[in-house]
Length: 422
Image (cartoon, rainbow, N blue to C red; front, side, top):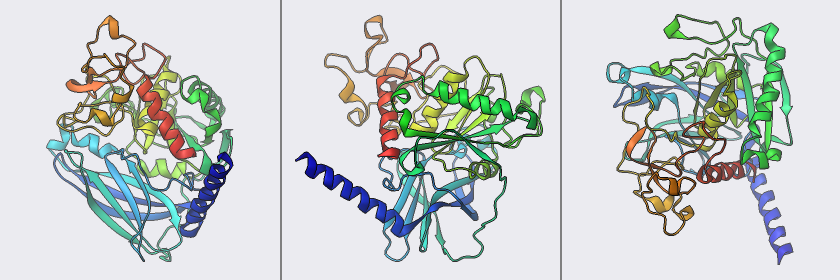
């Protein structure tokens, strides 16, 4: 019976691989667009299509089954309208919509979606999740694969080096590490920092038991200046990716609005996740689900920063703290279940981690000594002190007091690793 099952599994894998080869080349088609609006409105405008030399994603799991993210990209075969590829993702635009600035002005953000390069004409559709958690189609663009306006030239071409590579990109989680604020003379330091990055990464569970499922590559791209922008201190640096603190006026939120440079630089290697390593001691970082991750290289808590932010960017985990000052306004609708796997409004708790709560544990769960190491539903999370619940009293997605993700976060990370590698 086991031999029959194995044969069927292998046959199915070959069939799905053949499906990829039937519809796609093993390289990337990148679509840049502008996402504009204010706190209550949004619209999309097309920018450009770019061919890139590598595809880092799976050849098997082409259709996203997670239902994560504030946005979705779907790719349809023009001839028969069949769904060929989809992915959920988030962007800075949605976060900006909750800020005070969005109530006073319109603004445009450059954004990107990447898909495996189609062999025939396809239609790319972009969807946005509304306040009630429902996706709506907002934009559609038909790609003529013979269009000579698809750009084949490369911008920001730099050498790539393997930090730790364990196999072919289609069967691994591929992380490309990009430097920002490292000068030409500091490239040796960047290489050392990448080695430390990987060492630190694998000290945390469940990554430590999945070392063979990850590839890490880095791009040797120097900046003119060392460091990053700190606008509140009138410090402005000329760096290749233009990272800066005080994103949305939040002191430690270290991000970049320069999406094009990030994608141009990342194109030097196959990737599933982009990680920007900033040459700075000042505490800071940030991450956007399936968009990019940012952490500093030399802060005393750099290891926990990088792994916390990767929880956002890779696994779609939410922040579990609720008493910290942020620039955000109302971030979640407490009348619907959030899409993130580690927070809940208890509206549909059975779809979250209810199965992991031991019988007899009260829900909601009191934050007492008795339940200190218990999986339950503790009030406070996702920047909301009331009406939002997290799995445990503490976790790396809440504070850096400990060294572990809670069981719910670990399981969410494992599921995402499997999605990319199985």
